[in-house]
Structures are given as C-alpha cells and as structure tokens.
Image 1 (cartoon, helix red, strand yellow):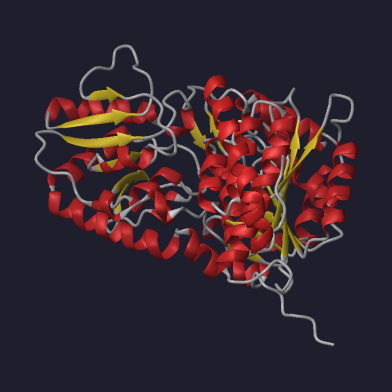
Image 2 (image 1 turned 135 degrees about the vertical axis):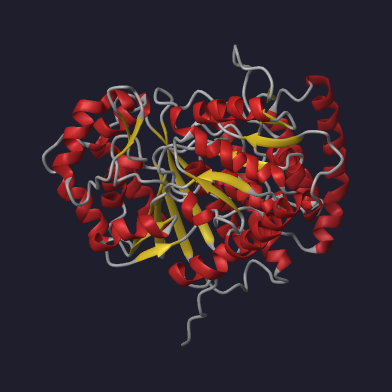
Length: 514
C-alpha cells in the first residue's frame, strides 16, 4: 500500500471514513501480530499520511524495522514520498508550483545502516540534511549480502536507491554499469562519491558524465592499507607512516604487500575489487581526483595532502545533529566524590589506544583515588578500579552518557580524520583530553577546549588527566569553549550554510525564463 499526492479537501473528506475504518482494522491486526509485519506498519503509516497526520505517519515509519528487501524498498519509497510532501507543506506550496530543485546524487559502495563508522554516519546524515534543506537527493548504494554491504536495517529518511548484486555480477564492470545507468536516469546536477575506500576510481568512472565530488572521510586513497597510515614495528608498537599513495604509489603498494595483515577482511576484499593490484590502478586513482569538481576533506591536514592532485579542495567537517545535544546536557556535573572520565570506543581496536589509557589510569590511581574511568565496552579481566565498564552505547544513548561525565578521553594512536566522539563531547559542553595527532589536533584546541598529549605516551596522558581532574573551573571553561566551537563549526545547519551551499549551489534552482 502506498499514498499519492494530496487530494482536494472534498475528496479527502469522503474517503476519511473508509480510511479510519481500515486503520482501525489494521491496528487490530498489528496488535495480534505483535508488530512482526513491517508492511502492516507501513500501511498504517500511509493511512495516517492520507488522513493528514503527517507527523504521526513519520513517527510510525521511524519505528519500522524491515526484515526483507521487499519490505525495505516499499517502506523506503513511501517514506521518501512522505518527506517530499512534508517539505512542500512546510514551504507553503503545492507539488505543482515549485521551481526546480537542485539534484544531488550520493553514491556509496560500502554503506550499511545503522553503523558506528564515522564516515558512514556522515553519509547517512549528509543525505538526510541535504534533503531537509530542500535539495532533491538520491542515495545510490550497493547491496551485496555475501559482503554484508548495503545492509540497511532501518528505513532511511530520504529517497534512496539500493542496487542489488549477486555473486556473478559483483565485479568492477557490472558495478560501474549499474551505477552509471541508475545515476544516468536521475540526471543529477552534482554527484558526491562517499563510503568507498579504495573503490573511489570505480565509482568516479561510473558517474564521470556528471560533475562529481570525492568525499574523503579519513585517509582513504592516501593510505590504501587501513585509511589511517598506522603500522607496527617489530615490538608490535604503533608507528606513524608519512606515505601518500597519490604521490608515491609504488611505496604504498609495497607497504600493502608486506603489511596486508594490518588490514581488515573488508579492506582486503575491496582492494581486490578495486583492482588495486593492477598496473593501471594508480593512474585511474589520480585521474579520478584530477577530473573531480572538487574533493571534500575533513580537516586542513588532509587538504594539504590532496591539494596538488585535484582542482579544488574543500575542508568540510562532518556535521552533527544539534537536536542530539540539548542545552540541558551542558550543565556541569557536581556533588560527586569521584570525577568521571569517559572512554567511548572499541577497547579491542588498537588504533583507539585504550591500552595507553589503561596504563595511564593504573599509574594515576596509585597517586590518587578521586576518579573513575567509564568505558563503553565489556569488562576486561584484570582491570578493576578505577575502571567501570558500561557496555557498548548506541548513538542515541551516547550524548546522555557523555553529559553524565566530567570529561572525555580520546587516546588514539592513529591519524584519525576527526574523532567524532571528541566533537560530541564538545556538543555536550565537556572538555577533551586527546592525542595530538591527525584531525584531533585541529578539533581540540590545546588549553582552550581541552588538553592534548603525545600519542602513545601513557606517562604524558596520565599527567594531562591529572591536570584536568585538578580544576573544576578549568573543566567548565573548556566545556563552554567547546560548546561554542561545536555550534559554530560542526552543526549540520552551519555545515550546510558554510560549505555545501558553496559547493553544490542553493537547493532551489532559478526558475526558467521564456
């Protein structure tokens, strides 16, 4: 069941009785089935929309969890139509008298939702907030069950086009052809290539007919090994690489050959799919960057690495939904005997640096016992006080947890592009103690919004943690400064106004004159 454009009021009034009856019947069915049939929930949402209860329909759609491709496609189509009418109504116009909207295609090869990956979260929110801002958005993403990509378990709140692949057609030429055809039918004004790691040349070639931008969420395309230029020495200690695939492809290919075990399974598979081992890969990669309208990077350091190889580089940080960070969260905690610092990351993932924090925390605990370290993970044998493990936290619950702590610790040993949880802490008005590396050196202003320490140096980290614990006044001032920076630089409203409108143009095209 779907819904169409608004009917005249008289026709709606005539139909409302039947719709109300059908809604009540479906609600009874749904109650008996305990919500196990997403298509019934879809039908209920459509009826609510047809009755004019647009917000109620949107709330119903938001709770649906489809379990099959048919359910996902049906629900996604109806939700996108609902969002379109929602936008038209908010602008006080009908579907027939709107001037043309600027069309933006977002293409992804390695997209899943929900996801905890910063780049993937950005892709989803980019589409969502561009759509809310008035752009005509289509998100084209690949689906391959064997690879577990395109696994969308929640309905996307914007128009999307899943391109499904089986084992036989999951190859470079078939993928390019499918994306080329799908995007070609849409005829976008601009294309943004996202969530693609080493397969960026593949997608860039598929959409080359249109002006396209390459989105760099980490150091992908610069570091083909693991996107963060992280190596290990003979003692298995982190080592920072200064290589750049765009300037020295041979060095990077040799590195991947020797250190491929430092790549996850998906990294290894997508490199093979991209043709990374082929002699022409480097030429295709640099060609994709050279032909792009521009490259969108997360911080100025990455911009410096990219600038020689493309026409335009734009520093566009990841955006954050300010509704997740209400002002109430910024109230500093007080009246507790122990101050709380938060580590929000995967404890088992080397690059996140929990092993450094563990050593620093044990050292500091020997000197003072006025703190605890809250960790978003399962308990680790041998780590007792001052550590308190609270399990993994969803994106919905994380801000409240941050707000319940005094400050955040981000001890990464890798050249991460941004450090989403550091920005989220600033959104909650909390200071950050972070490694002076990668994008964190730009996100966290030392002595202004937090403190920076030498990456991998447990002694320096312990000292900085002690400094942060010592002064409540300093923590409060850092938190105030961080919230201001968050509001000015990182909210989606500001990201759209300051960056995407300049890159893509205004959402509404000028009317054609005759």
